[in-house]
Amino acid sequence: DAMVIQNPRYQVTQFGKPVTLSCSQTLNHNVMYWYQQKSSQAPKLLFHYYDKDFNNEADTPDNFQSRRPNTSFCFLDIRSPGLGDAAMYLCATRLYGDLNQPQHFGDGTRLSIL
Amino acid sequence: AQSVTQPDIHITVSEGASLELRCNYSYGATPYLFWYVQSPGQGLQLLLKYFSGDTLVQGIKGFEAEFKRSQSSFNLRKPSVHWSVAAEYFCAVGSSSGGYNKLIFGAGTRLAVHP
Image 1 (cartoon, each protein chain N blue to C red):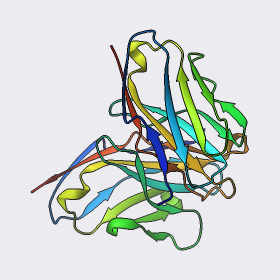
Image 2 (cartoon, each protein chain N blue to C red):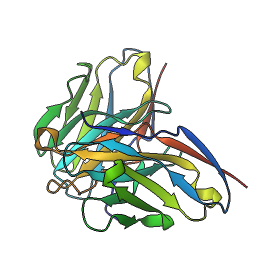
Image 3 (cartoon, each protein chain N blue to C red):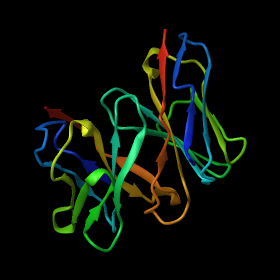
Image 4 (cartoon, helix red, strand yellow):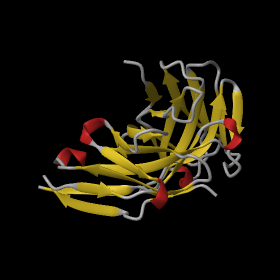
């Protein structure tokens, strides 16, 4: 089945040690999103790509970076994770067009910081 | 500013009872509205969406939602719940800010089901 796949499902890293989270999709959608979701909160948009056009949210910390080498893959890099970055990170995709097109989410990567 | 309010943080219902989860939105134009469900440790799954036409929308898993423009509401309903629907439910409005669709989420409603 076509889907959004996030790897790994669980990631543990040390305070200050760079970490990369991965997202791939077989939907051939041109828009990809990264969200941060902390416990019992709504997902918070970090940034999104329309093809290779990168769009950063104004309040996304500089510590968070992203790469999209091709349509299928998108990576979230956290350069120096702090304890406050422990969260679920969700990737989503969407076919650009009418606003009624929904976003399709992966199962997320839960990041823990030691 | 665009916003979504889910007034109920937690709701508990008995198995077999009916369910209604409330959602109110603030949006200047015609809203594009969505309900997503999130099971523990999982991503978000789309239940249903509304953008125009019939104000009563049918979704997956027996859910439906009714758009009421006069009340700025998009409440989610299910006539009889099973324990398996216990999860977190998010209402969202699609925003065209910046030309690309962004979702503005409500804070979520956590649903518990008593046997």
